[in-house]
Length: 360
Image (cartoon, rainbow, N blue to C red):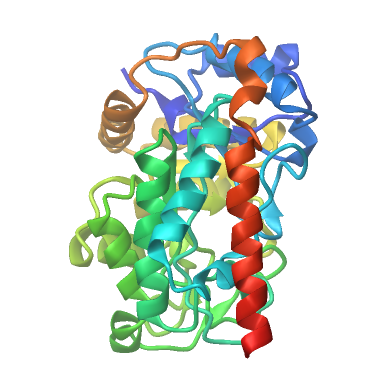
């Protein structure tokens, strides 16, 4: 049987599931959900929402994901411990500190039922005018980024939350923001190997479960398609970097894609290129994407065997990491969030960063 739904990670509209969302998740066996600030009111509500989503699962739990990097990229701005951006954290030159911070994030997220975080950024901040990455990066050199990426991945994945290295092949040298336009990387493959690839290689060594393809056009490699939709880039990641786990697209509703391709075409191109899971931030777009895949199989553009291979990688990951879902006990939800030890850790962290800045 071909399980198309497992290749989809979709957004939902509100703070609880609507009937048509429930029906779609259950009937099509959707693989995962991505949460945003519109889906969050409190940890209690969040846990209740996630319990209701996981009730709809078939074999394995769904991936319940969020962007929870710290700094400005954090969807839950209340209740959860609010850490400084990673560029600030890296100034302390302490991978151990980065591990402990990621552990706190993982403990807080998993206490509500979240099992997948779109973090860490493996991008190198080469271009100071790059506002979309900016202080989300760990540093301005491949070595600086690499040592923190590995400790972040271990901090998440040894504490119950899957990590995602992003945005391959590296968003740090670009000028444009892929939310609004298609960024172009003016570098050759040798340059990228010597720099951008290094943090991703470290992430793979640290056994990261996901790598996200960026909406990034590299003229020297593939002048036609951004990495998300490019067979050439997926091949480099699989064959040269030897990554054998899950490749996930960036959100296919970002304007870097929608200005150049229809949603239906982007869906099929991303699957053909080699992505295992596709992100749609809206429910309606996820339905359109799902219909496109069905059509692609009927028209023999997508082979059922390719979907089966993706399903196998997805179920292998779920089998290893999400064996069974134990519903969150709602009365316990707040016990791991912003607790005293986390507050003390954050206070010390901020003091150390401030004293570094004063000394400079």
